[in-house]
Image 1: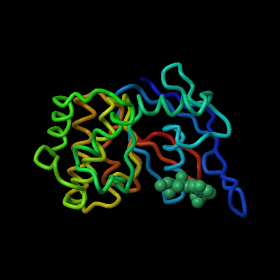
Image 2: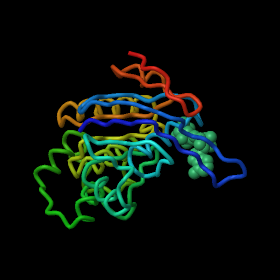
Image 3: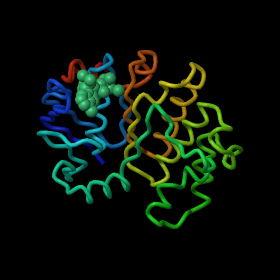
Length: 223
Ligand code: ADP
Ligand code: MG
């Protein structure tokens, strides 16, 4: 699906003074594109990603997946849309500690009482270099392996878009590179749109398209 963001704004009003985190942002992302979003800490990267994921609600503007505007959806519809179409990966891996890697990966399918296609999940684990680790608990996995489980979990539902917020923020250099390699690989193999938020320039530079954000305002693409 193509993603079209138009005139998006978001202000946080909870604190002492309101914070305009996203200011009138417009953006087009084609199906299957791989883009990096970069900017300083506090520039609005996570807010933008959360809005695109439907995890936060915008104050104004639209976010369309093809012709479907998620800003107009009821909460139930939005939750359902997200579960079916959007995979999300965070800096902290957010795995359930008492479940094995495999059980963590199939969690989104269990939540929907979907039939588990074990062959497909095994293939996903293989793509993410996890096949020998599936029966381990997260505590027995390295940071890089845990993040790869989180990526597999985000892909379990066969989403059309994978949104990653500083996916390598908790990893050393070598594991970071491996995780980004796998993200590119899997995005190509499964034709999944890839949006990676990062403040790490060396990671951003690997993408064909880089979008910058500064103080809630999108800059031009660096191509
Ligand atoms: P980044 O991911 O680029 O570091 P964020 O999107 O997290 O930036 O934050 C953008 C701005 O919005 C910052 O000034 C931050 O302090 C503020 N902000 C983020 N989340 C909240 C929140 N839940 N309540 C109030 N302010 C917030
Ligand atoms: Mg952030």
